[in-house]
Length: 489
Image (cartoon, rainbow, N blue to C red; front, top):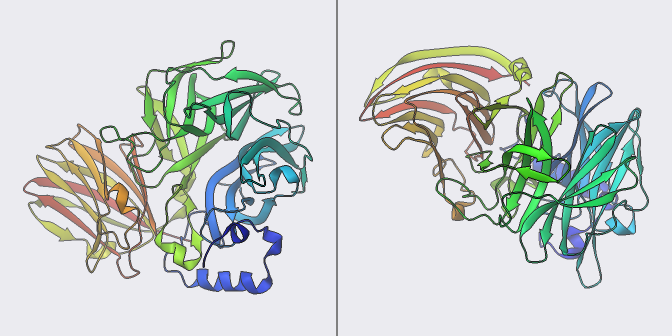
């Protein structure tokens, strides 16, 4: 299909029954549909939005363009869950309606007030010369799941000194005051975040730019998020335009966090380091919420802007990560799969043994949808796993103790993806023994190392028959102790 402005900027209501049926038929034939990840019914999914616990359920929205695997007129698609694992599709939650949002409902967040869920978002408009006009608005969802939208934006435009790249409001409450942080771009094309405050969620006053120790850090800060974990302030953001640095920032755009202290009087976030959140290929625009038991839960987009994927030909694109609990150890963010994931476990298979300069296929470990846990010890060299193996296909994950690296290699994972940005990702690790927790779905892999110290999130697109698992050790000895659970629907 040839995508034009006219075809990209169509409202969901304009879809005919015949168009929807054609999309559903194409999607149903896709060999890469996920089994336990949130994914669009058809069309394109991107940023998670409005992640909130409200009326006994987790509510999550995502950016959705329904007509195909491209970025066009964005809507918010709504899913809800009682346990973070089983998600019920509720359909379109928020759609463009007014002039100031004529070209889409962009990303934002949710907050509960007076038994109502307020959903703040960026309203996107293009003028007759195709110049962007950005404003911040909100909709309210009541206990019955009914949505009422604010007719006029509460913040009609960006302040002086900033471009119309002014989006992704995250709202929180401290004491009796509500705060909003918005991703922005200065007129000199450097990224930053802006702060507002309100007493009632309706009237917002600009407080100025969030001061940090990183004044020149990319050209645009998307999806900012501020919260606390065990007394530590955390600022998550997705800065665009970072140059590769060592093993970091090798994707088209990247996401990470600052851990430090947020001075609410001076609007200064003090931190001396930015930590990339994910060492893999496909992770962006994460958003968090606080669970009723106090856990800070993160969900990210398992995809990237300006990137096409093999499933695009099937008229759907992208998914969200599994939910992860955030913890802080040694001033570093750890990401741990939420404890509820164990509900997905089915039949268990185990293997324990040693390898010495050899490769071994685990014939009883076949599968495309599973959780694989265990430990791996490598003496002096390279050893690891080959996942989703088949004819000329394999996804490599290994520990290289000589170079002190953990490596994910998707060179031969299946249909190539974003090869211009490389097919290998790695991060430094001085251990010769690591723990693993691997979540394999039809077209993705999420690998948590050392209880969340390192995370590799990636899409892969192997053929259906590529279901093998192999272990290997190159010119070294290695030991493995593994548990594999098939995942139930």
